[in-house]
Length: 64
Image (cartoon, rainbow, N blue to C red; front, side):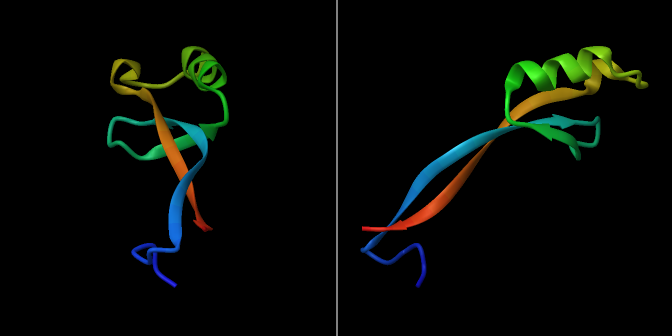
């Protein structure tokens, strides 16, 4: 079964909040934006101005 099948639809499951380093690699993930931002605000790191918190939508396939 592929997600191009007519009887399958993509459904948003949840959103992860990733803390990305300057190379855009995921350093740590949280299920809440506030927790991710708190971690980043209180984590000692070089070049903190280039670190970001970004959402990552996680989908699941659902058979109609």
